[in-house]
Image (cartoon, rainbow over all chains, first blue to last red; front, side):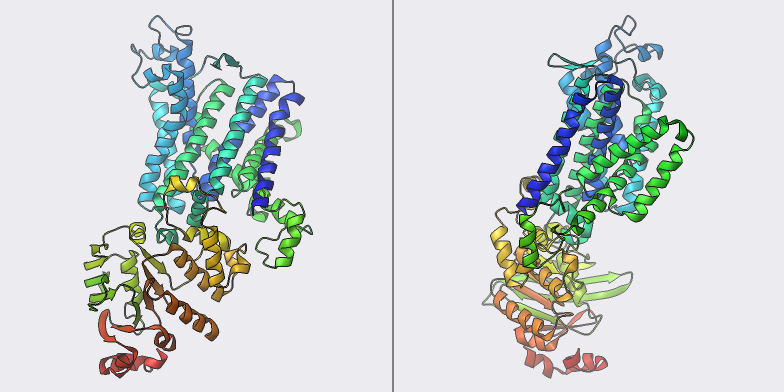
Length: 375
Length: 254
């Protein structure tokens, strides 16, 4: 058991090191910016894997929490530009255009960086906790929960678009200052920003790994399996689900903050249905019950998507190709690529067969290195 | 009822109706601490529903259920479980996607909080107890086996082990020997006789041989009511009980 865990930590560590090493090989600011975006999508996939893969909560509105985090960062970076991009009153430019005369109360605390950084994770987490408390306390589950998450996202999206004078409306919040912390500046097109994202991704991946390996993670898997049964052991199922839902939201919020730094703006499309459903596809392709699988799935899908859409031969048809690949994977690999790789490794002689009870086989497999179950 | 022992569980005038169908009708039942009580009755007598009411799976329409002197019928399921009540279901319900060891870890539910369990990992303080339980139910060679791959009898044993891991004061067992071989049934009877005294058990069972092996007091239910109560011999002599069972071929085959 412990051998299996250390192999898993090793594998996760190697992947993270490889990600951190990319700027040593790539010396192209444009590419690094693109790769940083893929890493952020990987974080989103980890967030969804925690709630969908481990606890069985299909969150179709994951982009809501992503967008909220993104707006928190954008508000902070916008206020840093004051008064360069503004009129005389020290207001963000779009507020001046909308005849706002005084900084709205909701913007005031975002002048402080610690507040903005905390809010970027806590605001999404609180939103999710509130929504989760109502859903899970009321025993809403399955498809109904998925629809509620989707609806909640659409509502928040509409409010942001509607409240143009406070949020920039359709245009979002643009012309942002550069993010800097402790004397380090993070230009969106630089290795330093890539490192910032990569470090956040690594920390996120390992925090998620610890949670999934803890007893809380185990109980959540039991909830996914047989929610009703878990209650009769004395576990507060609604609280457990709310917790993982909020943690997932906090991770998505962090990803959203980083996305604002990398993209240099925040937009209502960040809380859009297309992005939100894309996350589900990435995680399904990578394997929802594997954090690493989901993360790599996101990078793979968005990477291939980027490559195809930039290749002349597929300019017109790349969405069709992506759709076809997705259908094939869901049909033939219900546990995603991670599940397929694990099944493959188990077939190799010496690989551990999950559930094999023969003591001889177990002893035999202990001495041989294999990655079964490590994903 | 038994003045020598403290009363642990008391149902007073408990009634439940499902859209007009009265499944349990003004039921009075008292179980003393340390007792092993068998609940029998023809199909549809309300036995399983009674267990559902005690553990909170169904809600009483009227009446009161008291456990250790405090009313529990309005509490949420997990709160009832935390007062010390464990339940084994009729259809064995274990976590099929998890291993036997992981199942047992979930059974050890003394610290049920989210925060506390974030800092607990496999191989922690419960390991020894958990492995002893696996030996007790004969699953020590299957700790890393996925529960979905166990035989029916083994699944029943695993669920019994889960309840023991939970270590409740009162254990509610719904047909624990269903689907077991004669040998497995007699092993279960031996186990129950060992649990007697340490735990209080309420067992719903159809197998009269098994009931005779374990029961001190038998409560017979019929059409949602308590029909008779007494030792196995008293029950089988009882005219009302014989009449209730006539339709299903006599008590021996019930």
